[in-house]
Image (tube, rainbow, N blue to C red; front, side):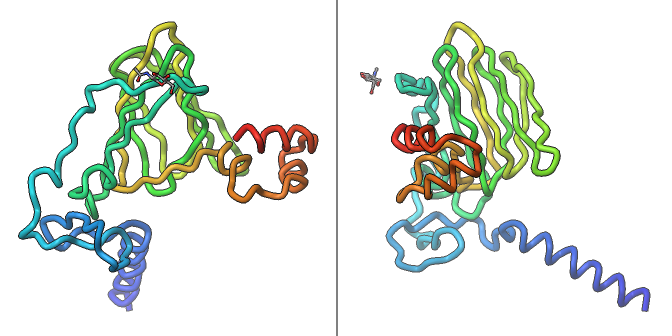
Amino acid sequence: MANHMMFLSLLALSCALTLAFEPSPLQDFCVADTTSPVLVNGRACMDSKFVQPAHFSFSGLHLAGNTSNRFGSIVTPVNVAQIPGLNTLGISLARIDYAAWGVLSPHMHPRATEILTVLEGTLEVGFVTSNPENRFISKVLQKGDVFVFPVGLVHYQRNVGYGSAVSISGLSSQNPGVITVANAIFGSNPPLPSDMVAKAFQLDNNVVDYLQVTF
Ligand SMILES: *[C@@H]1O[C@H](CO)[C@@H](O)[C@H](O)[C@H]1NC(C)=O
């Protein structure tokens, strides 16, 4: 009976682990075949005979992105879209450049925890825990400091220095996804019903109309 219970507990545990995240690869690699009509959870694998070093490579991450936009930040992603060889491997990278006082707006990654390090400048970073606490956890980071954004939580980065800033993040998915809160709420296509958004955010309808045009 004890053995039986233990077996069931282990089964439940292993199911939870395999269902919550992608199963471990069953081959050395599965380079994404972007031309394949086969739809799987991820990309289909290309025939390994045709795999080249370039399928595992990306160049130019030393180059600063152009931060001349209204947010003063730019992300250079390095995930399965840039490196097909990352397919199924559950890991990726991003470089982020920030102009002075630039912001990377509140956003979340539905499929990845993020670990960020500052290469240049001073960044204020923070995330908010889920309901009902909605606790704001924040820190100012200097060059060489590292910070973690747990999977799925809303977070942001802001350059709080007078020069430019650079950070690099590792993410625990080859396809982490990004949901920018403002874009999802005020910039959806087609727009969310503005009276619903006004009530949900306790805003005047005119403010919502303005925000829906802005985003
Ligand atoms: C950066 O982007 C701005 C706005 O799109 C553009 O005017 C400018 O030429 C770009 N700068 C460089 C160095 O590409």
